[in-house]
Amino acid sequence: MDNDELELQIREIIMHALKRRVGYDGFVKAIVKALYPNLSIYVEPELVRKLRILIELIDNTEKPKTPYDVPIEEAKQIITNWKGSRYLVDNLGLPEIYEILRYSMQLGRNINLARIIVFINPWGNTAAFKLAFDEGSMREIARNYVTDFIRGQDELVHEVFGKFMSIEDLISRMNNKLKTNIIHLIKHDLEIKDNDLLIMADHGYDIECGDIMCRLCHGNSCAKPIFSLITPLVIVR
Ligand SMILES: [Zn+2]
Image 1: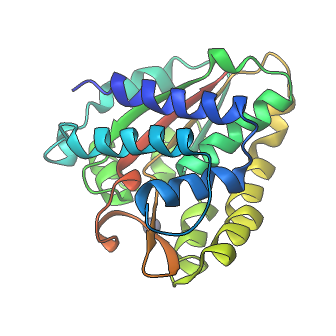
Image 2: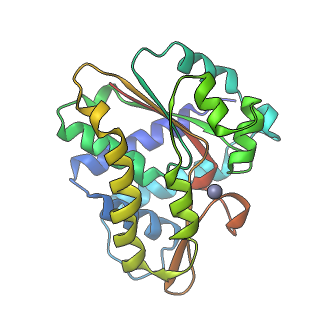
């Protein structure tokens, strides 16, 4: 199973957004617009178009049938051989990945060396990730692969973002909580020059909107999981 196409498309999206100086808010809006073209929010069309291609790619990509079919050995090898800082995050969405790279660029890091390696989590949840790794808990995975474990993101997704709210509320709260939290936690390691970072997550989340109200979900708690199926391995040099 080869997810190179997904990696390239995510890269293209992020590079395009960075070049256009899109902020975290604008990036979230673009995702909402790509998923729900009829919602009346204005976002730069080219970013939305690129995100739509990504959605189609995720939709059409061949997915592991069970967690045991995830090519996790590849991930294990990269993690085991990694020399810099290592993080395991419970739930990391595309907007936070964008923010990590945006912040890294502000710090003067060379974003061209960054990579977002993609694995597909067939269930879009922690359970599938643990089965793929053949470990009992996220904490054990973190312990066995010597990573710092960040668990607050998933709690936020459920507790704060599980219920429907207006798009404006959703975006401003995501900005205040999800974005601020992840940057706060990895900031120190990012600021150390010549320190490479590896950030792996078990899955992402989706943005689900009704007529005007939106919420976050992942895996089978979404009507149609797309972005939550992404298990990212983010490399920042
Ligand atoms: Zn969860």
